[in-house]
Image (cartoon, rainbow, N blue to C red; front, side):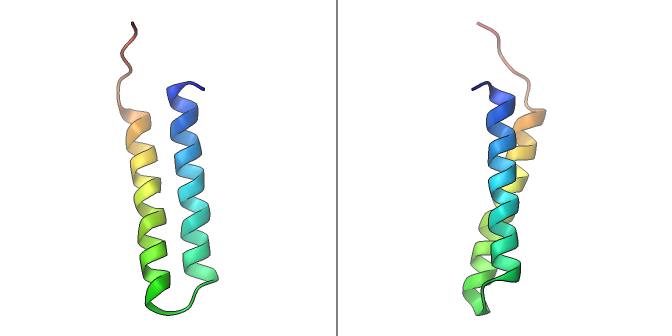
Length: 55
């Protein structure tokens, strides 16, 4: 799996976790799950912007 594919997988998993936290969970636990998912979305997108090093 190349680096860009990994970034997309992290971003998509983050979107899924964010949706679960927003739509399916009640209360304060949902806020934690939502934040965890959003963090993965942001980190996946930032990873796509990072330059790659060819060896």
